[in-house]
Amino acid sequence: MLGRLKRQGTTIVIVENDAARIAPMADRILLLQDGKIAVDAPPGEFYRRTMDNPRIRIPQVTEAYFRTRPANGTRVPLTVEEAVPLYVRRSPAGS
Image 1: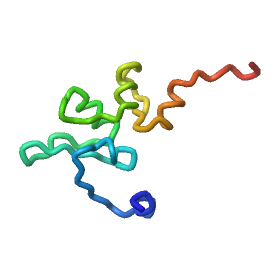
Image 2: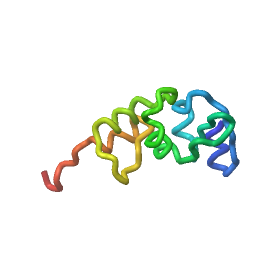
Image 3: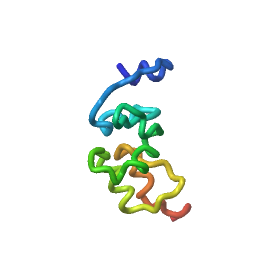
């Protein structure tokens, strides 16, 4: 249902302690600390900026990506489906 509402352009605000649960659907994730916005970023950038924060639960696939890939402009995977193309070696045409 949330996915359908998002596709329709409806703004949805979810308060969740486990950002990893909603990250694949989110356009932005905010981290509140002491009543103030500490981080406001798209999910991939959010996890780049908070990956050293022990209070933030990073999706396992995202954490694995950070440990095995250089930080570059590539979209950060939030799901296995997003990660597979980043790791699968494509065979040359005609092989």
